[in-house]
Image (cartoon, rainbow, N blue to C red; front, side, top):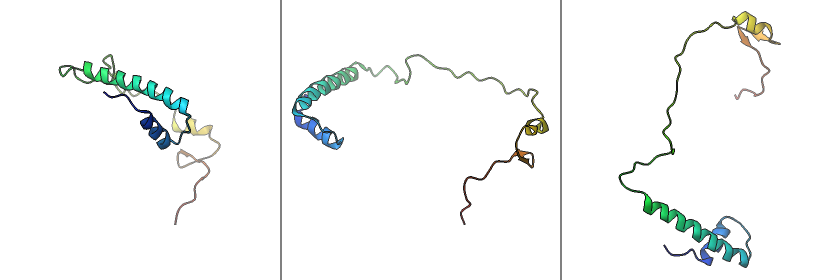
Length: 99
């Protein structure tokens, strides 16, 4: 892979709307080149017989069965509400309805 040029770094800086000095262009070109070479090396290591993964260790979701458990009665819950109507909490309107 060819090294990233100073002009390419300047172009990327313009696209990103970053003001960079000549010294920064040289430094960034070297740093980006190291990063791109590292990514290329990883691509070389990947083998066709290894399936792609999103995690380094297998993950398993653990679900529990839904079990109905005792809970508060609706009247008890709404007893602490500052305002209730039709078995629900009543809250102030914050949006106007569109007509």
